[in-house]
Length: 118
Image (cartoon, rainbow, N blue to C red; front, side, top):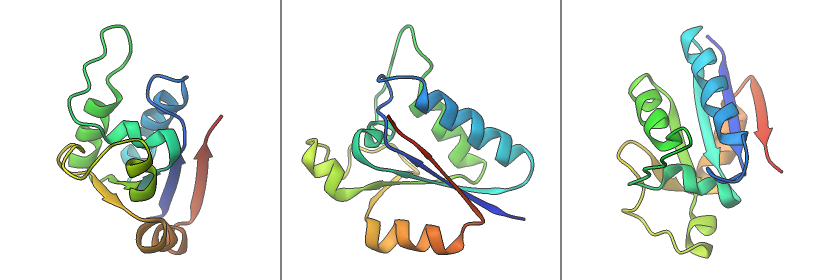
């Protein structure tokens, strides 16, 4: 089994990057691959609990389901603090972590890395 790392740097309502994220992650999960997602910059909005978009896909809800399928989801703590998101505002199963302790480990463990950003 291979491991895919997806770094998301776009916010959930900025463009289609987060939709690509959840579709790519699901395709990899369906094929039995491990998937790790690191949210950086505006991408940290993907972990925000309580998302309820009316006309757009609920990326947070989809990611919650993917976590139950084995996806790992971590956001950069510095990016969260810079945008006013604090620990406890992320939905269950996701984590606020760090580039040093999480992203660097993910990079060393992955076979493929994809960055989605604008």
